[in-house]
Length: 263
Image (cartoon, rainbow, N blue to C red; front, side, top):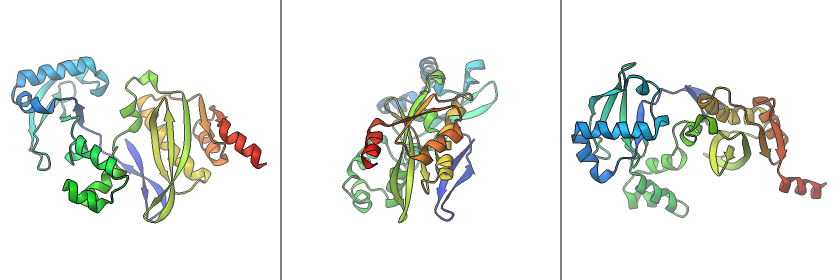
């Protein structure tokens, strides 16, 4: 799988390789996690229950021949947690079992992350660093890289329920003192895409919105949205036509009225 990242040196989107995610994040109760971790039979029973309740969270091979416990990973220095591993019998792949209450890479627990993000609306990083005893770079990464996996795959649990009608827009932002734009894709009260674009030119927007297309088609290879609602900006409309030639472009009524007033 590949993803795209913004690089200041080139000012462009650069494709990089990403190692397959070999972690399964499940809703353990933190208070009883240590007890469950020590009891092999209880841990396996919990996993079987989760596989039945949320099959989309697990690799396809686990539904074929099941799994076996495969030891532990070293205890996390940051969180003081041990994680179990499992091995899918069908292909001998090894997976880490993680908790939903811990952020990716064990940087902090989710309650701390929530408080930092809430206070970051008013407080600078150095203040948050003092209060929460986290270094400023950790806080900055939390604010800019909170989601590190496939956004569409994380949001959409049912392959057939990927929204076919989406809305898009570009939000102005600054990166290291340079103006940039966040090409955002939303639908049904949820975010499905947010990629950095160095400009609002058609070529750059096509590349940025293309991240959504790539992720959506990783979930459903034949995915084709029916409509896209835009503010009428030509480069945005052209970008979506480049990505999905048969899509129907809908102009936002509010922006249409504004354009009439301007003319």
